[in-house]
Amino acid sequence: MNNILKFLLLIPLIIASDDVVDISEISYGSDEKQRIDLYIGTSDKVLVWIHGGGWLYGDKRAERWIKRFQNHFVDHENFNVYMIGYRLGKATAPSAVDDVICAYKKIISDASQRNFSTEDIVVAGASAGGHLALMVGLSDNYENNECVQEIAPKAIINIFGITEIKQTLEFLDKTKFFDASNYVKGWIGPDANIDLISKTLSPINLLDEIDLNVLTIHGTNDRWVPYEQALLLEQKLGNQHQLLTIDGGGHYYFSEEEDEIIRDTISSFLNSNFNMSTREQQD
Image 1: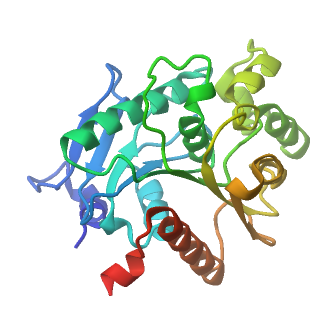
Image 2: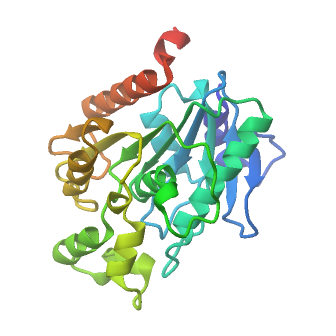
């Protein structure tokens, strides 16, 4: 049984028993959220996962996010998986961005010490985690980057992530009945300058002179992150971008057939970027 599945099955028992889970937690800051979980894989390749939750909610060990990760990355046991925790909540922007960039620097250091391959790193995330994964890949162009490092990810897997913050805020204003549903407003706070926030924290504005392969997966009927967000990347990145469109797909809750297409696309993307066929290795 792989380590991530083992941890998932033991979640209800951890507090009430002495079960030992094969998991390493790495600190990269003083806040309790500034922690990274490491699950050792069977190769030297590194896969980084960033959970979503609109920058307001979620946790690296939340069952829902571990299950979603496993659903997308069926061959994850072949990788050394780092799951990033980060500061979140109302009016906390840009803490989440700053955190994941510094967490990535810590991952580079830890991976080097463990003799993992720092040339073969993919960063992936879903929803707000997709946005944060992109920001890690684009950190060279992020003005507030205090965790400068020389080793960039080889590729990014962006699962319906936010790419232009102001447009997403306006979309939510038009389509949601309650202000509380506008997670963008919640994250940036009532007094924030949305134009400045969008300029500095939107991946679409940080793509100049970036050499990065990106896979985006997005449903056309997504009611939380509009499909147009994916099209912005497609138009800007050109042949550096692979877009898997799920016609009629929403924000998760895909059919089993659609999930299988997503899994196959991710496996193929990993193979093309890391020259390793994880499914063939398992067989």
